[in-house]
Image (cartoon, rainbow, N blue to C red; front, side, top):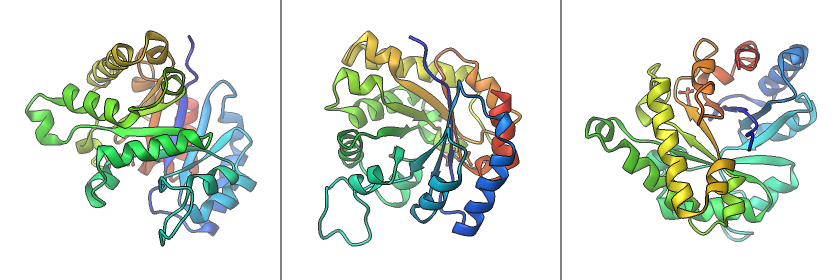
Length: 251
Ligand code: PEP
């Protein structure tokens, strides 16, 4: 089964509405660099979703960086999955390492978010990855496959086949260091094997796996050409429209 490549930006807590508008305008002017056979998405701060929905080129989808796994209620400051879906949001990140580390999110809570995202018709992007001491201890594959199995727990095989996992070594995020494409491929292969064993071969074949961690225009192609990697999740280098367009052109 051919998996559609995906280039996804994660803006984190960057950009005002005015800056998001300027990004969308500039990307629109370079839209000839976007290939209709590839999917693109920007996971933006909530406040930028509206302007992006109106202004982004048609095949650049909206993504959110977080969600609270309840339909509604007294959860001050949180955003419900239905609110994001109503907005035309296609993708939602769950389990980004910054949320795991800074906000203490557990695998169980992340799993609740994944299930809520799917139940509301959106696509979860489950972020997983080992930290530097786990890498040194040689337990990367165990850590990562454990996060994947817990994060996707309770989904059907069809739901897993439509989901996305972003493999992002924690030590590579925002550090300028990357995994080697070969190492990232090995981890992606282990993820697919664990999914095949737990759900089905079809689920494993359909699941898209992105690499994330200091991806930029110069290195994006080296990851995406690996057989088990289907795209990239990009933080810093997705903030500049010229750099986003250059990555789009490179893959
Ligand atoms: C990220 O935020 O998911 C990320 C991978 O960041 P960066 O590309 O800046 O390392």
